[in-house]
Length: 154
Image (cartoon, rainbow, N blue to C red):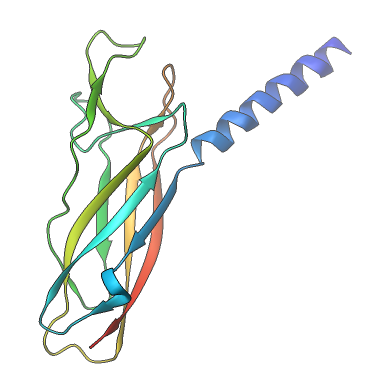
């Protein structure tokens, strides 16, 4: 009976940590929901990080750490360089050196240009956000969350 109870508690803890590790939400927006042919607009993508977790910044200060990377693709559009916000330095129990991390909510942005010869009155593109979530003691396997964004084209 003790084995069953211990196993059940262990399985519950694993499930809770697994759900927490997957709890990051990614959202995005196109200003005014529209794009203009031959023009650029800055799109934003937000990563919400649950309390108790952090993700490595785009420049995490460690050679073996997995940086957060945002990759827009598709839709016959052109994408400019992603603007990554500065993370903040924080020391954790597993390292003597400070790591550069994001916590709570972080917003990235990049320019999207609709080619002058774009055909159609709507555009859809995808954005992938790759990150590694960690607690103060353990890091989870890297994840990639993907979203689709669409906008009218005028």
